[in-house]
Image (cartoon, rainbow, N blue to C red; front, top):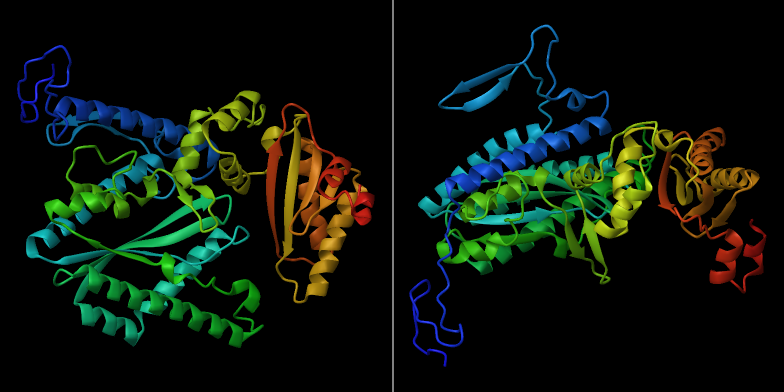
Length: 487
């Protein structure tokens, strides 16, 4: 018989034949010092291991020499003092907050402390805090540097407007804390966006926050329209690129998100769900204000997340650190003597992450080095999808003429290929496909494309089963006689 006596959590209870009256032990609110110290050691080892992988990716940069002795003759020293503990001396520090996992942790830890102090001050003085996210529309073909430049251009232009100043004065805003974050997905490509804490002289109700967000989003969209109108008016002026190329993607109002941040004990947990998942600085059991500040300060070390798009698809969004961590786990060496993508790596990828992840990972590698050098000499079968866009073409006819030259070259190589509405697919062994991809750039340049954007997606097939163009046409276009003569 189970006791029906109501007991306080963690109290004592007598057990009958069943354990329904068992008292669960109380859960500690915070970790003890020994557990936290052990986790700190694990995180530090993880960062050092990630830096080793990072060196192999970013060869020849400052990041590649981070943590190495500054001078061979000087040596490395080990120091200790009660205030700062143990530390090394004589080692180089790159100071790259965006690419180095070790330097990112050092810099972001200090920034996190500063932001935490600001949020605590807001709580003590009764200030209001609103968390905002600002985005631009983009596609997979957009260049990361261009989108980041446009994002900051819209922000700077917005801050200069009288309407923006009036908006901030109407709500009593006296400052903000802003950071930029970049993620990648296989659907829409690079996704830079802004996170910001807006600080107000008094707390805002949910209704007032919604009013602030609606007016802010309207100004954000209007600023994009104004800048695009300026580009269209400039036309082909030497100071501007062609309007259709350099135009800023019009964002959606619903993607400009503003949330009221409640700094009371009862409201913090509701907001903390968005800000607690971290892999370096935050620890379970820390106060929520500290964890909230990671959304800004620790934007470089966030774990990737799966988001549901408007069409219902679940898409994995990754940042640089997610890609770096994955390469670390599969043992990426950067050696030119062995392929990047071994059979074991193929198995790890297919069992660990969704297929959409691989494009972002290998795009990162190929953008920073010769795309075919590490796999030269292998006979791995693959299917390559190529999107080729001559950026300097002024008319559709000129664009088609250049693309036709590239397709004619692909046809002359004798490989199986298929021309689709958005991309051209070629199939064969890795070396042949990579040589064709490289030569497509040269053929396009000879045809008049001085500025070319090309996107390459590679699907490896270790089992050797590559679908030929004839099979593909027979499967997807059995009734179209024109497509049967393309191989």
